Image 1 (cartoon, helix red, strand yellow):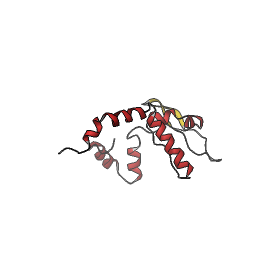
Image 2 (cartoon, rainbow, N blue to C red):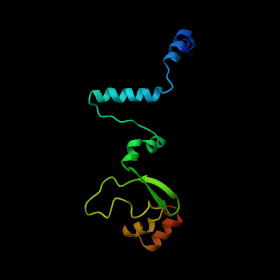
Image 3 (cartoon, rainbow, N blue to C red):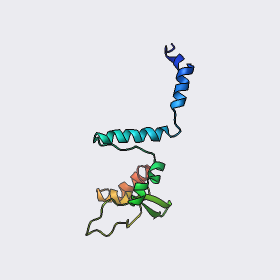
Image 4 (cartoon, rainbow, N blue to C red):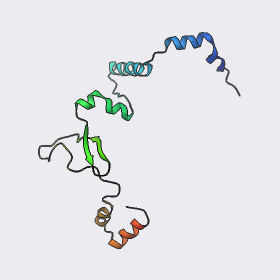
Length: 129
């Protein structure tokens, strides 16, 4: 079955009109237009971006959203900084890096009441490391 509109794609007038209106920065342009229109009507909104876009975002850089940390197995990495600071807290930076996969499994299993034999069995079955 073919679409009755398939010929539109190849029509010279429509194709030429599309390419004349196309801009190299079209996605960014349309995104800005959308944000401006939503802002004009006081509609809450935000741009969805990929990881590279987040890392390059000037606002996040200026506000210290990311914090470099040294991880024991992964090396230097960026992580989200602590978003709030309390007067009685130890500080605005991390005391420890993010845990390695399975780093605290045995400790957590002990806290929920597992015996050492049960922990060994769970680990041997590959359910925890």
